[in-house]
Length: 111
Image 1 (cartoon, helix red, strand yellow):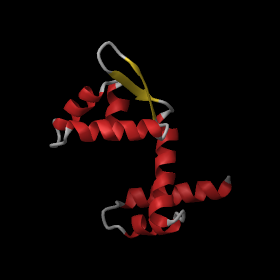
Image 2 (cartoon, rainbow, N blue to C red):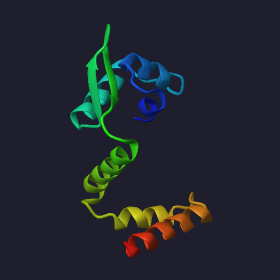
Image 3 (cartoon, helix red, strand yellow):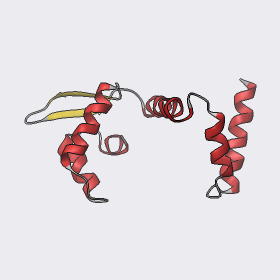
Image 4 (cartoon, rainbow, N blue to C red):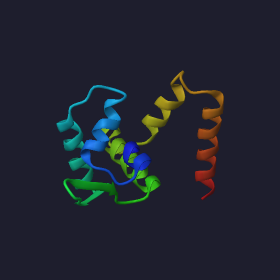
């Protein structure tokens, strides 16, 4: 999705070539993932001149929220607390990131 948000409407080949600059990946893997993202409603495709052209079906923030929700449901049985605890206990987070998380939690309580 990051590649598609960055490049705009793209073919599988364009995503594949962009990803190939960073890591070795099979073309069929990219095609499969894009088909899955389309089936989940995150991408839409239309016929281009020679290949399907894919574009985001929803705004980035909406897609990210749906993907995070799906991840929490699948990995943490729908409970967000274990994910937050893991993130807070992760020594990779900076003090600023921890403060931002705390602020987001406080803002959520006010709503």
